[in-house]
Image (tube, rainbow, N blue to C red; front, side, top):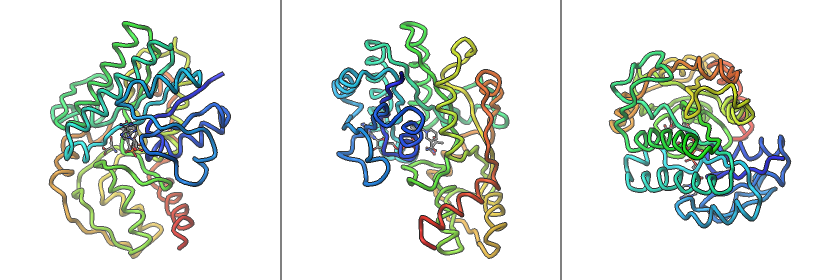
Length: 317
Ligand code: NAD
Ligand code: AKB
């Protein structure tokens, strides 16, 4: 039986992953944790919760041992834009936090899933159809911690046999929790503004293509990869995965299919634009498709239709 600890569970991914995993594995078998004192009222609060600061190894070890955890989904992290503003915090949380999780997993023989990102690539990476194995010289602190994290996870698998697995997520789009300080967040904010004001001023410039994915596909990716037969995995840390690639204009055109009067303007933020410029335009996710059956369900228009319908309900519009 799986007994799962999710770190950083109150963030954009964890908020939905906890609920999805509790449905799949049983409420009592999925322990949500975060540095914050308690979960917000709602579905997330209807199950076990622990305060775990991943920079404090004893807090991770205590909950893993007390609860008999055999799988850790490690989501606690500082994302790209916040990481550029607070590089030391990003290093401490992303590198020391992951090291602490891997050490506890080594001692307790727990499996570990942790996401890498398109940020693990940099300006010298081939930008189109970026291969699974290629140049990784990122120029952001977040990206540096993601490459370091991929290597550290491989090290714990090769040296200690810890069952580490990961994906390189693109920008994730969702309507339940807001994104937490990334570069791709514009692609979430645009939907809220389209519904509320029929206008959005994008901080990412025209023609800047990045890979993206709708949250239901991201949740499936995590569960599918952790359920995959290890004998079929040639790669582990971390698989390229993607569902679509767009720039603000293409996203706006999709929104206009449902809100014809929607207007897009630009107010480019040099920091986040610089980060976006250093990331690929599109990934090649053949290895994930071949090794564990990755196959996303949502393309841009299917995602837009669902996002707008769900947000209308959420915002009571
Ligand atoms: P998020 O910023 O929404 O959530 C991160 C959570 O970590 C927050 O709830 C925060 O309170 C918590 N946290 C921060 N410091 C902590 C600490 N010291 N101890 C414990 N918890 C702490 O992030 P997310 O979008 O849910 O991302 C989760 C993971 O997925 C991260 O590793 C991120 O790099 C990766 N990822 C996310 C995306 C995306 O678009 N959301 C894309 C690629 C990769
Ligand atoms: C960010 O923009 O920092 C994240 C990511 C792609 O890793 N959404």
